[in-house]
Image (cartoon, rainbow, N blue to C red; front, side, top):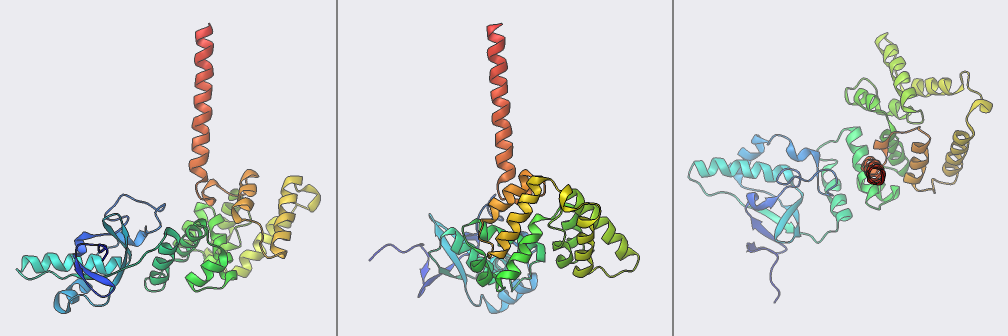
Length: 307
């Protein structure tokens, strides 16, 4: 008989474990968004009402963990684990027996673990639209496609594509969405503009909203169309940008067959989107700049030696 995964009381398909022995990524570790089990909600305040219920009634249901060496990483159930930790502090102070958490152990690779976490939490604790767009992009960066994301996030593939447009927004536009000054659907219409144009258009839309006009997706779309056509006919568009525009139109017509990051990379080279729109690009650019600086320093050093 093989060695069991953890040295804890064995259940049928799981374990009763001390909540303090479980690892919540991003709370108990220094990991960030690069980790598939990182969740920004891990640092939310503890739900003390849930903890008080656990003190009276014990831990109900189960959470899922995956084995990483000798550690048990929480896949979903972070808030319940935190509440159980809080409850145990109160119970120990009162001289009572601490509660244990029912854990089911799953063998999951990074992409699957991420999908399980999203599938469990995205509906239970409502993500903001921008947060959901970020989660979808992380999921796709792990090698999944838009159809996989549609299943995991409970959306249509078209809905996934629309949310991904929010990844191409300027930080000022994203802040306006977070502040509820602009709806996500209206903001998405700005994604085809350059960053400078997005900020200009945002200012105009916010000005119209302050004047009492209702800013909808339709009005944003009309404003963007007007921006693109005013004093800017087809002949005045730079050949490279016109080529990209035609490629994007063909790609859309054929069902978005080109890899998304390839399209983003071309758009970035032309200055239409920022370096935060492509996962890992900012770090890559920084590394390239450091390599260039080192080469220049080496050349300068050699010239100095020759002199």
